[in-house]
Amino acid sequence: MPSIKIWTILIGILAVLCSAASPLPALQESDSTFAEAVEAHWRWDLEEAIALYDKVIARDPYHANAFFYRGAAHRSRGNHDAALADFNQALAIQPDLAEALFGRGSIHRERGLFDKTVADMDRVLVLVPKHQGALEARADAFYALGKMDEAIGDASTLIEIRPSLSEAHFYVLQHTRAKGM
Image 1 (cartoon, rainbow, N blue to C red):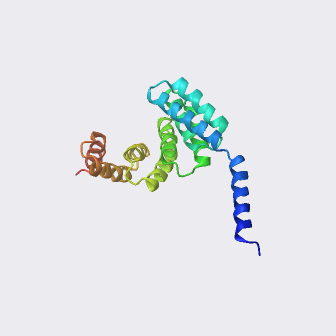
Image 2: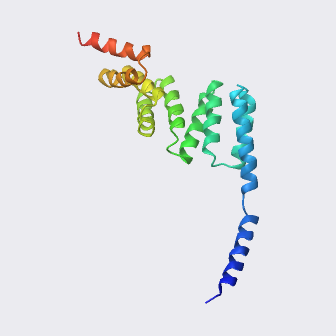
Image 3: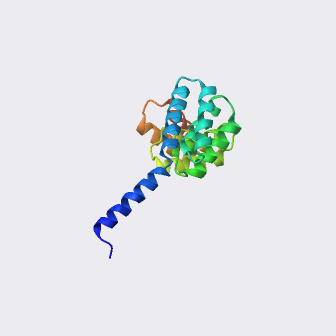
């Protein structure tokens, strides 16, 4: 059986070899670039933000947040096809990324794909049960699909969370009038 001294030396050699092969410098550079991209995004310099997200993704093609944020930037610029592709890629990497699901579902809503909107918002609400945007989008989709009881359910939840939300009151009012109440 090897002595403790030999094990210590072997562990030391292994640590040196692992640190020499470590991708940490590239990840640190990627993280710095990601921070710059988010900053540009917040400044509403979407062209710069997208270019920086591109660099992050080139270095780390599994950076789900970079795909999500780049998708959000594309959506803000009105490029919904690129946004949808990025949201889908973010979800392929990290299926529980609620905001990517919300972004994709919002595009479906804007395109009138209400069944897909409901499916994505259902998943968001499993992950974040009181996500106001998802509740509102799903209520709107249910309303468009003629599913008033479901729309009212989401609108009622929204009213509980945020009583001043006028759209939620509209759904409740519309439903009660439709039922002759």
